[in-house]
Image 1 (cartoon, one colour):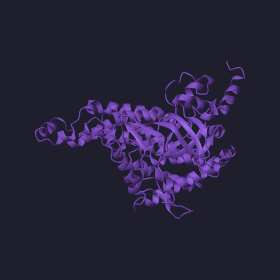
Image 2 (cartoon, one colour):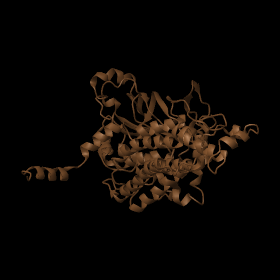
Image 3 (cartoon, one colour):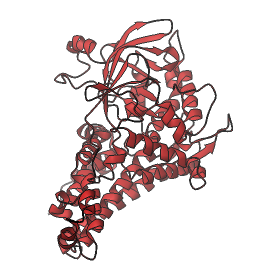
Image 4 (cartoon, rainbow, N blue to C red):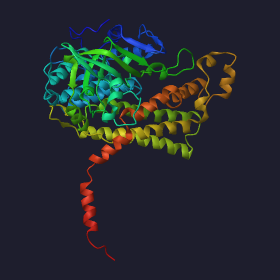
Length: 495
């Protein structure tokens, strides 16, 4: 079913979301084309979990906290797409992001709540986009119309920013790469009366097989291009003719009874995108041939993307700390000094992140684009890229070897095995069922293929940490302290 956007439908609901994915999209997994992403065993857990959370937008318990009334249509629409114009709007958006992440255990780096702020950031730059003239369209008007389309229909977007990882021995702006780029990186091959034809590939599009739309742009690494044909930003339906989605190997565990509570539901799937002469309509282009507005946006401190990611990271931190604490209690080591110190270190990271979240909210300000932005979070992505790996390591150390040896659900149900499990695999004051299932959760966070995928994702989610550190250093204002130091060393030191 092709998504019908002719009549605004408001906040997404579970059944509508599932039906929207049955649109003939070209998705490949393990050498075979997926006929229906809503029923494939590697994807159905994620699809139905998102449908469950979408339904919460219409529930008595969460509806008021996750939606607002559209001033244009009167529909209740997702707060993810609301344009924040005051501090109260930011608070409401924070609560919506908290609900999304509480419900998904902080495991979704590409939930529907994540990509909406990317489009809002472009909307805030609509005047700069409109200043780049094109005879076929107005880029500023395009992004305003597209935001309205997404808001009134609660579309689920993925994004793809990077080039294929083929040969990065030269910088992307190097003229010597022109031949290679023409064969590989996404670029314009033709202009038509309907739009531009693009060809090439993009990575890494998380959740692409189960999204409604694919937003394509350039990351900070690739935005400076020698050839303007490679400079473009747009969004098109995931079922666009010529767009092929290649899935990676699933990290969810199916079938089986081993019990992977996170991997079974939250394997959001990462994909390569192949564009085989794909038409991008003129009204879906947000930038073409000119990188200046994108560079200005990437170089600014405007922060609309804060809550979706910050709330996810906070819940992920709290989850790892809580699981580690419960395991320490279940095996009777929580009173050990070294274990308690490690748990305290995990709690420290949780508290530091909470303080930082409060700080970016306190630093909110009105932008030139007329929207409220959270304060700068320039060092926070760098901090979490470091601390996430540390928390995973602490969870492994506290859990010990039990992390890799626990009975499956079928083992627990077997009457011949159960007496041995009750005797030899119980914990301190807890039965084998409680202990084994708790350890399975820890395994999914720190050992399983799902857990390892999550950790790689967290490291790169905010971009290259080393590049981010260098960029932070270059913008970090140390003038007051350096002036004070210069004054100190300008005079002879006392004997």
